[in-house]
Amino acid sequence: MSKETPALFGKTKLLEGQIDEFLDKVAEGAIYFERGISAFLETRNTCKTCEEKLSQIIELKQRCRELQRSIVNVLYSEMLIPDFRADVLRLLTDLFSLLDQMGKNFQDLIIERDQSQEIESKTDDTGNEIGKKEFLDLVQFVVKSIETVVIAARNFFRDPKSVKDHTYQVRVYESEADKIAISLKKKIFATDYKFSEKINLRDIVNAIDAIADLAENVADELDIYAIQRTL
Image (cartoon, rainbow, N blue to C red; front, side, top):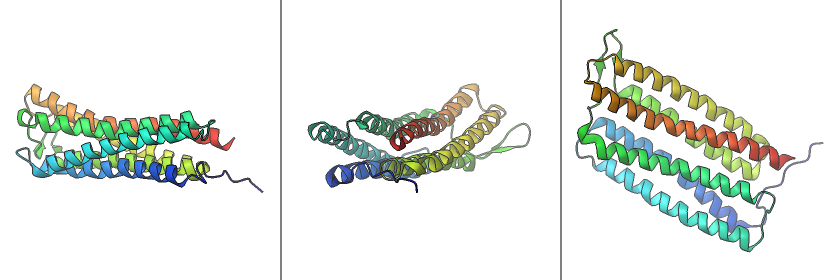
């Protein structure tokens, strides 16, 4: 009969609650990011929803920073899980970087929107249409990669043997995001946009796609942490 791996913080409800809240905030940030980008694609003028979602992401970042400091304090002051403490802290740092990158990339899009080419449905020289739907498809796969890596992180604390099931999904979502990003960039450079506008749109695609790459990196680290927990 196989031996189950015990929950990492079985008797420390306060710490468990803080980590759960931290993970909730990262997942919440992905929702705001998706809604904000969707609003950004709909209008490139003054966008109340864009500003609102950016503000919400910034607030989430501040709360996650507070939770990180509190978790570090509890881990060291209570001398908890010395064998896995470093892994937990690295994981929280990696997950925060996802939230941070979403905020930074979205903020850059808002700042630069007045100087950038409006994303509109347009046909390239091969007859393929480039439009907002493809950008939204890219965002959706990026968000799925974030949401799934958060699920994997939760399982690291409760059921490390199941982590790999979710990290595999993260890689699938990241791969799909890459395919859409490559297709988008090919179509962008096949249009009659000015070269500077093509570069700007390419940078938007790269900025969004890079978040899925970051989620995949976190998934790779989670696989290692989970294996160490089950040894």
